[in-house]
Length: 224
Image 1 (tube, rainbow, N blue to C red):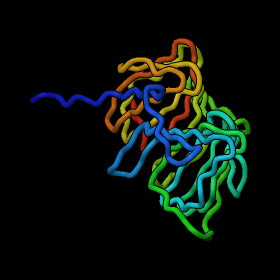
Image 2: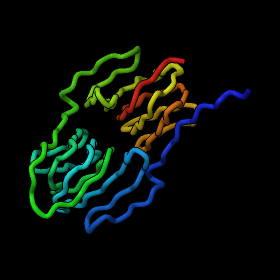
Image 3: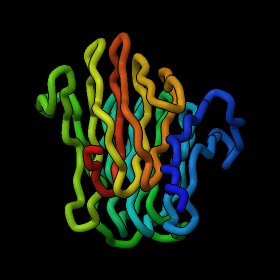
C-alpha cells in the first residue's frame, strides 16, 4: 500500500499576474481562489479620487493596505494597516491619493442603490499591537480572530536564520511577504509574493535574512 503524498505549498508570483480593469480608475489582480468556499485573494489598485460604489459584504473581508490609504464611512486605513469588513457591512471605498491593497475575501459583495444598515468596518492599527514571541527568532502580532470558524490573521516577524520546524497544516493558509523572504520545500517566497499552504501540506519554513509576513489562517498546524 503506497503512502499518500502530502501537497506542496504553492508560490504565487504576484508581479507575473495581469491587471484587469474592474471599473475606471480601479484595477485588480486575481491572486488565488477557492470556489468551493467562496474564498479568494485579490490585489486592487485604486487611482487617486477613484471610488468603489455603495455595496454590501456577503461574507467578510480583510484588507491590508500596501501603499497609500483607503477610506470609507467609518474611517481611513493607511499603509501598513488592516481593515476588516464584517458580514453585512455596507459602505463605499475611496482613495484620495491612490492606494494598493491586498484583500482576503470570504464570500462576495452585492451592489446597492440606496444605503442600508449594517455593522461598521473596523480599522486595525498594526503599530499599536504588541509583538508576542512565539518561539526563538519569531514574533507575532495577532490582528484578528474568529474562534468559532478557526480563522485568524497574524503579522509575523522572522529574524535572520529563524526556522519553523516541520509541521502539517490542518486547514489552509495564505501568506503575503511584506519584506524580506522565506522559503520551504517549494522554494523561496520573495517580497510582494504570496504562498498558499493547502490542507495537509507538510513543510518547514526557513528565513535566511529575515522576513515580515501577513498570514491568514484557516485551521491550525501540528508538529510532524
